[in-house]
Image 1 (cartoon, rainbow, N blue to C red):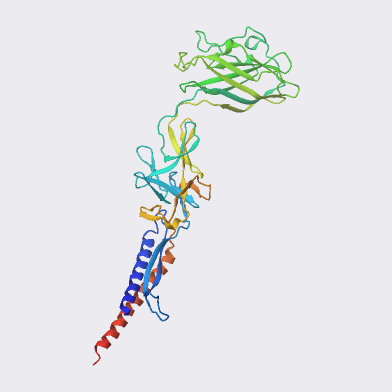
Image 2 (image 1 turned 90 degrees about the horizontal axis):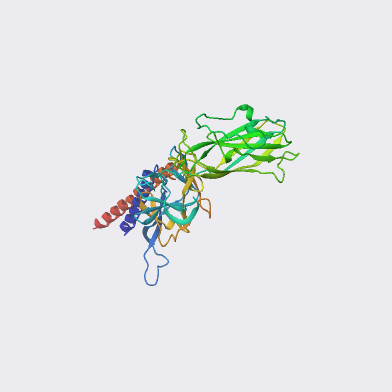
Length: 429
């Protein structure tokens, strides 16, 4: 009878309405992917197969397929909001089990782990002690402890000395030993006067405890052509027993082959502002590289000073680049990689099983995940301070809703017509 056929049509229309309603309800859900109901006709068959004049027995729900098209990306002010632009899924650890999602609204829990709204931990590649990304997967954790200080081990300057300068004569004791030693912490403090040198520059260096100190270099032109003495003071105290390093330039303004280009600082005792020891490693030593110094007929200028020391620092902020590397920024100006977000792709992403919370799990149909770095192997890139919107098209869903409603009404009309026919048969005399 047509009753069962119409009922199958009503059930199919009801399922379609359910799928469409779910799409509409999640139109504003971050990372949600729209679904569509797919149907198949039903035929009654026997052992010998269906006859050539067989009439169908209705319709069945063949499956509900999710559409994994890219959703629009909305930018936010939270650097922990992440969107995937392209293929791939974030990996989440849910009590040890791995789930996959496109919803990137992450936050930091009290232990410093990057987690979803359901406290599932974001997975990524770990980093070693040197900050290099390894191939080991694990929870991404933000280290909120102080970053250890680093004592200055090298200083490099790029500068030009004015070839037109003349010797100040008795600067720093003259052109030969004994040179004057200055000490800002002596009973009677001493310091260079402007008449003692031709040029000077200073930079901040750090001891093993991260205390800042001022390294000052004083350039003194000698009576010899193309020759300069460079004296070094730290916190106003002469280094190397007051002895300079002599620089010799050729007629082209570059160093001669035999000239020294480094100032080795040895036996430095880091001092506090009152002249007492800081308690840092003492004696300390480092090297000042002057290899990029020239002597041209233009004013003295320092274009670059680079030193590798820094003080202790507190976590100031977090940045994530498009390759998924999470960088921590510290108050001392340093930054360090904390991990790299891993993305996963599947040969058959439609085979993934939705488990709620906008998450999926792998199945036999989806195949095993292909895990890699963002931007490689066909995986998309990560956009920080952004979220991927649902890919539901409301206009299309509303049109589909009308169609499903009409299908329901039409099948209900079939039942009404079959009822009328049955009543007519019953009323036959």
